[in-house]
Image (cartoon, rainbow over all chains, first blue to last red; front, top):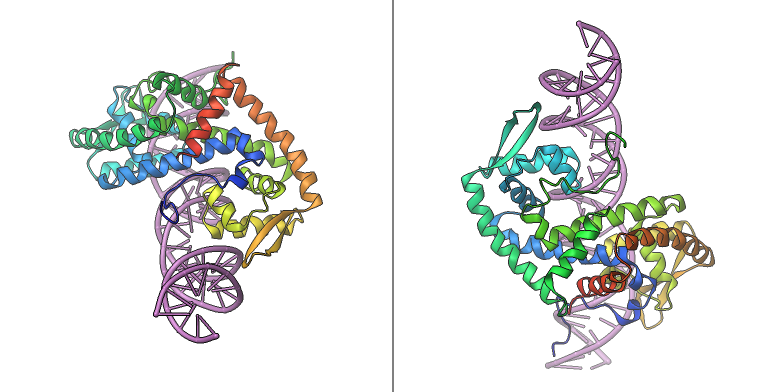
Length: 155
Length: 155
DNA sequence: TCGCAATCATTGACATTCTCAACGATCTTC
DNA sequence: GAAGATCGTTGAGAATGTCAATGATTGCGA
């Protein structure tokens, strides 16, 4: 075996039995950090990050979200959404349309180029998700998704 | 009912069925953001955040971690650990001891005051964990911990 | 044993992200 | 129609993340 595993996320066994090992907040934070890092690395070839990928995904849906809705769903400050949409719009992946029902609001809509980009990026994202799922035991995928959804969207 | 639920994490049903709803990376990121925010809020009365609480917890263990070990375990840059330990040390909660086996390294050790603080903070943290678990079924509690451990420390 | 590369904590610089307050335009309510 | 709330935007300042360089030490191989 190699003298030191380069990317290993295995815990130092000395630290693994501290109080943190049973702390779901810490585990969640660490799992999230790993997953986002892997996602960012995988999306980098498309010039995307997890954030911009998420905006693209929501713009690609038929929900026609406003910027405020994006902010709430992604737990971002509205000003961060401005920057995010600016970046995607500058690349022609997304555009702002006036919300017919509220002229203050913008609906973020994906362009054809954006749809192409999203389709390609999605493949990269799926590879990471694959990796994520394979790190888990034989637990059914749907069961895992259920649990994650419950954590991400508590009552 | 109130005109708008203030802290509700419930998804806009229009957005909940986008591609993101099946994206474990996004769900993990959102769950982590919620959990850390709740943890920070709960620890604020002690002048702690999730980060400093984690350092305290590891210093309180009998693992006697070096700063580098803290950095790896918490997925932080070593320079961030410096600042974190500086802050706790300035408050007398933690101290640096020379590692007998490596004079380059510091072992971060909790003080008596730190132990008191940790005991109190732990109660606050447990309240949040309780909240977290209550979002899940009784039976899924252990499954979630296993799941999170596997995600936080993949092979 | 000497010398060289690697490692540890630290500092400093810089980028990214977060948080907040203010603003004009618009909506909602009275 | 006036008053107050909301939407997107801007800008400022704090917090966080990332990286390179440094002095002190360690471990390794010649």
